[in-house]
Amino acid sequence: MKQSPPVSRPFGPPIVIAHRGASGYLPEHTFAAKAYAHALGADFLEQDVVLTRDDVPVVFHDLVLEEVTNVAAVFPDRRRADGHWYLVDLDFAELSQLAVNDRVNPANGESTYPGRFGEHLPLRIRSLAEELAFIRGLNRGTGRHAGIYTEVKSPAWHRAEGKDLSPIVLRTLADFGYSTADDNVWLQCFDAAELMRIKGELGCQLRLVQLIGENDWLESPTDYDLLRTPAGLASVAAYASGIGPWIPQVVQWPAPGAEPVCSSLVRDAHAVGLAVHPYTLRLDQLPENAGSAAAAHQALFELADVDGLFTDFPDATLAALGRRR
Ligand code: CA
Image (cartoon, rainbow, N blue to C red):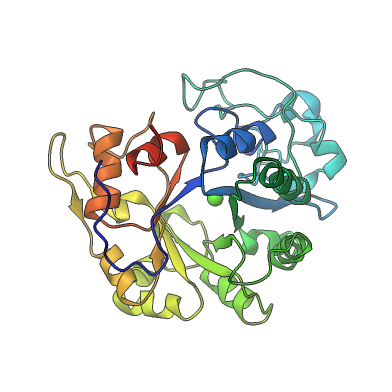
């Protein structure tokens, strides 16, 4: 793929964000997935953060444990009446006994992404502090400084459980030297009110990213239809440096073999100075009708002009940018 033209970009050349690590190759958010993403050359390694019962921030995507761990076998009696095992119901020492596996449907054990790693091994859930120390060590040992891209998960849900996640995340990041806009970190959240609080009340100086979903996902109280308008994006630019939309909000393929069609979202975001980092590129679950990973990467980087991409396969995305053979 040819290099992007030398247009002025508020945040430099596109960045490659390893989504939950190199999760296309190894179980998400394990040290193995993070080490491999670092070795493949990803610019940023993602952390989703959830709180344990004893208030330890851990790197884990879901609020529930059963899709990517063996919790049902290890703690069969810790299930709530709604049928789920919630991470917030276990202490960190208990979570450390669980093995992390590739994502499955807990009802039938079927892999969400057949063909991925698929082995059941004692890969562990890690605290945010452990993960940041791990990345610090990888950076030191290799001399290649990968950044971090940390998400405050479901702050309103945590608050309903009596927990305040954001200050704990910010304190942990600061402990590892991530505290200013010049540090190699982006902090992301779906909840606009929480991001405004992080910027205002909590005085956070880090670059913030407003994640954008669809309202019917019920991901947060935020109105994403409103945020995606020019006026909404202008309001986001008052507290954030970027947005993280879902790929179909940026570009879609109307039918198999059809040319990709871009929305105005990237252009509108750039007009108010916001970087755009869509999620998530998966080789084994391409955007609908995209046809190939090459076509998807080309549409995102050349046609839509995004500033970065969350990818389960950092090597493929780096290759599409001409940064890896
Ligand atoms: Ca995330």
